[in-house]
Picture (cartoon, rainbow, N blue to C red):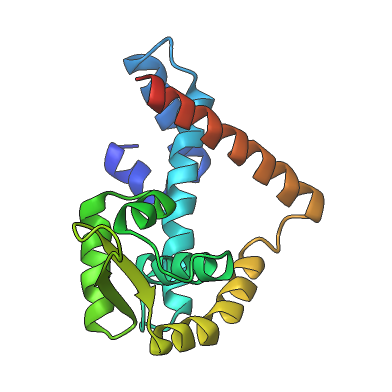
Length: 180
């Protein structure tokens, strides 16, 4: 089996065996299960985002939809005055440049507004427009039901266990990134 074959059939037994041998050869002290787990989590993230975007019907990217969701959630929890780009960047877990591009695009679509902060004229506040609220309301229930469907193959106990493990992993990674 060649490396090209592995990428075509990463889940078959031969592909997995080849990759495990590769890990052991290039990094004998690495835990092959952790390396494979990293790859599977990355792959699941990619597949989930792709499926979520497809479910949105091409109207919005997943990143744009998440930004609308974060603004909607902010409004629901007392941030009716809007959110700053830095807050959206933190909520999305993406760079400030990425959020700027998302904001510009959504503003161009008429789904959000960008206004100067009321007390600090160097900052901006981002708010949903009535059209943005309408799009969010129209799409949100369907997206949540779709995401629920993505995890149908797991029992409630398995979903909770997976959630608990991923929350713990993310907390640990955040602490490690702060320390670095």
